[in-house]
Amino acid sequence: MSGVCEDAGLCEGIVCDDGQQCTEDICDPAKGTCVYTPVEDDTSCNFNGFPGACASGVCEDAMLCEGVVCGPPLDAHPPGTAAPSDATRRRPPGQGGRSAMGLT
Image 1 (tube, rainbow, N blue to C red):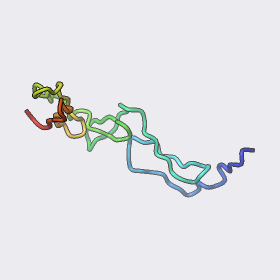
Image 2: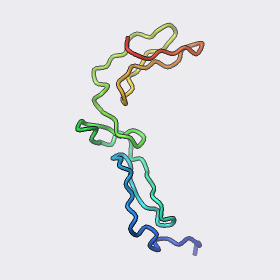
Image 3: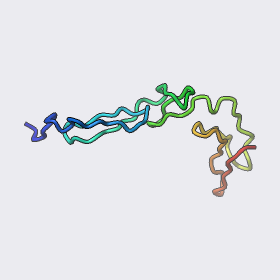
Image 4: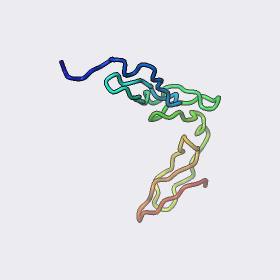
């Protein structure tokens, strides 16, 4: 015996639901507590009625960055990318700690 009491009714009556489509919600029978584990990234989900994709346990709009083209890099900045969560164009910090965000 391992000394751990499992499935002794600790999860009886417990409903685990964090309201996220991109997590697997289970009750840990050894502790009687809920565990929320992110599903695999790029798993399909419903983002406010639009096609979405899971990313680190959160459903993001899969189409939000479609057609978004980031402008040329600013002074010492590498090319930017579009952030799927809000479709803003982002550039990582350049030399000297400078950064740029926004539309160009």
